[in-house]
Length: 149
Ligand code: CDP
Ligand code: MG
Image 1 (cartoon, rainbow, N blue to C red):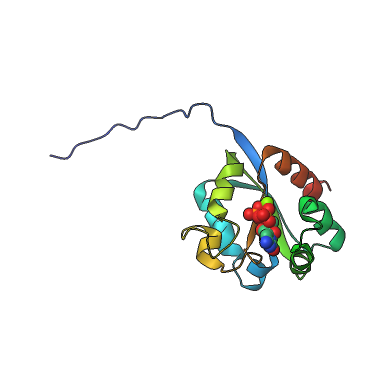
Image 2: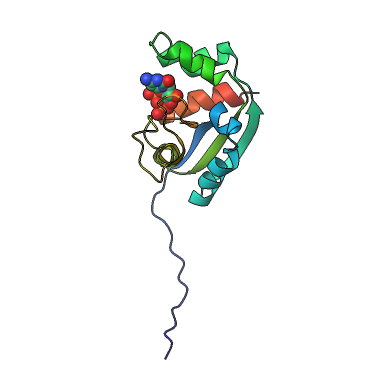
């Protein structure tokens, strides 16, 4: 005899809707991995609210990476980030900020867990395919910076 299970609608308890800024970096665009990264965000259940192909200039790099300006790796990072088009987007959903950070994986692709975007596609501490806001404060600042107009 086949058991039947009634469909029950569950309401999730107290989930925080968040918006986060994602950059699909120039290495991902060059390697044809834009679709792969977008698909992972979508399959996870996040919404894409805004999406744009754009090339970063030096001023936008300095503003976006303000806390990194002056670090020994910053000039290399700026050269990389301004080297070609990237995709900027706003993703939203339940706890979207930590969820996307987890999908991205650790900064260094060599150390990032397999199953994460960086862990599956990067062996670099710089060319690591994706940027994702790290807090509500950064998300607000970065969304304003990239999508003010
Ligand atoms: O992107 P994430 O927040 O994981 O890392 P971060 O420490 O905030 O660094 C920002 C970005 O700078 C990284 O994603 C790398 O692309 C780059 N970076 C680098 O080129 N060399 C380093 N030693 C550290 C970071
Ligand atoms: Mg960071």
